[in-house]
Amino acid sequence: FPSPAWRSPWVFPIFLSLQCCGGYLFVLLFSMYGFWLATGTGSRAFSGASGRRGFALTILHQIRRDQVTDTCRANSVSSRKRRVLTPNDLKHLVVDEDHEMIYCYVPKVACTNWKRVMMVLTGRGKYSDPMEIPANEAHVSSNLKTLNQYSIPEINHRLKNYMKFLFVREPFERLVSAYRNKFTQKYNTSFHKRYGTKIVRRQRKNATQEALRKGDDVKFEEFVAYLIDPHTQREEPFNEHWQTVYSLCHPCHIHYDLVGKYETLEEDSNYILQLAGVGNYLKFPTYAKSTRTTDEMTTEFFQNISSEHQTQLYEVYKLDFLMFNYSVPSYLKLE
Image (tube, rainbow, N blue to C red; front, side):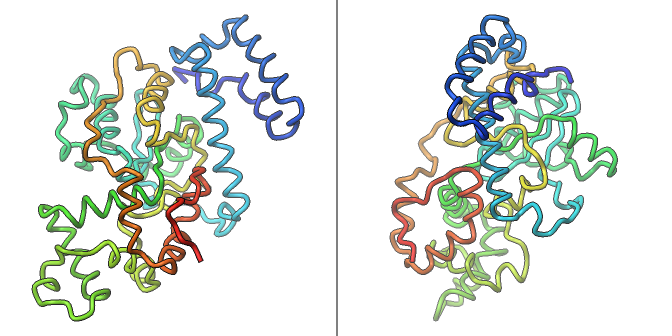
């Protein structure tokens, strides 16, 4: 592998002790850290993400991996079905052959910019600046190769040997972001027709003919009622914009080496680019935060949701909360 940073052998003894020998954790951490600095192992291993911060980031991502593993085990997710993933399960995993990386994209978690970055990485000189790539071009499926396009042996080889990563976000903040983008923007007529009309028909009493025809005025309360309606998931899987992360990326079946978070997007993204060996010439693009869905916005959207519906909605997204270490929001009134 061209950049062995994410497989540093010095990481694993540290975290074995974290799980098994809590009493000696700090002694071991400091002794390992001293050895790491004294021998130069750190600078070789981190390929640019060096020093104390590189060491701390390694610890952080190991803790995140452990959280996923522990949640899968505690909820018997990994053994619930004991099934082999189908090609359809792998359509969100973008492959970069040149740098041996696999990125599972999650809509509403900076996936447009990460797809732009992946186009730069896989373009072999066609692109140099991610932000020069139009957003709509980043979502053209033929511009990036996904894991479901490979043979079974090729899939297994890449899952075993390539660096795999995904990005996650506070589940309800992501949900509100999806609602705002798909149901409150007038230009999203395809979503209004495909989902809005269905939601209005099922969830709104005495809906007008215009609302039934256009589906362009879905209320957040109606959207929530649609999501928790058992008929909805029996009918078809959730749309990817509000599907759970564990259903999109299958972290109980696929061992991700890195779990980035939207809350630390820039730092986590550039750390991954450093590990890929491209951090010296490629940085993750920053963009204006004015339109982002915030915790304060999310709180406002949930004010009119009944405690019964809040509880049912939390159950839908519970594994995402637990798996990625997001606490139950303070504004929720769970029954």
